[in-house]
Length: 299
Image (cartoon, rainbow, N blue to C red; front, side, top):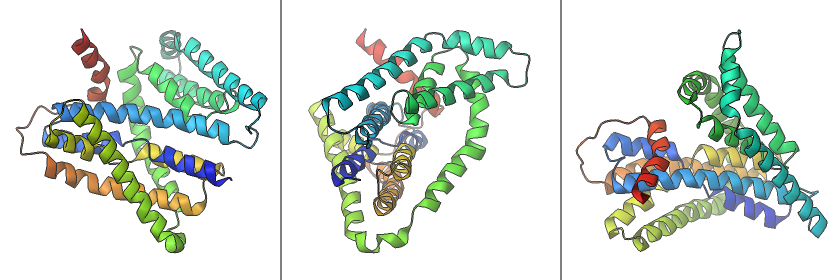
């Protein structure tokens, strides 16, 4: 694997921000609905989307068959265009598809339909679009979230996700990471952690200051955007399994995720003053409100 693409992939890992870590801490402090809280939550969601998109682009162009000729680059773009066009076209019928699945006279027909469509989108992304499979599942999830069955889908998916899939995912990541290999790469790991912290702090804090936030408010936004989490681990795992990352870089990336995840909640608590508790909002509900609230402010 060329060093250039490995470096680009490391940059992709650093893109996203963990929505759950920062939002949970903000919710516990009662400041999730504050100006800084909504900014952090909205920016983190956008970061996750950007991370998935960048993963797809890097995965497509770094593939051995995706060399540098104009024909090969054109073929990649065509495949990506076909997938996204087809995904968007089919997405218009998700309401009908979920309604059909709900009417099936079988046990858990709705959940079975959702699972099949998510896997189908993942397969299509990988083998039709030449992009990462997570992009397909992510796209399917966005379309399902727009249907009237969203709440029922959440209620069906969450028990399976948090009791089986999430623990298995984190265990698999832990088993694949090897801290012993970091011996010769301790300096690289430390630099990676420092870069991960500096880029988010300077980029997000500086952007907040430019947009009219005070110095303290900008600091809170910067701190809230530091944490990395599940998306970064998914991207790193994809890179390792597809030969885009070496084992040492993968292990360093896992250490970076662990470090940023552990230090972000205490820093958020330090930067936010004692605030009056606000009514607790379910995290998924808060995230889904972002587009509606933004639209209302525009109007």
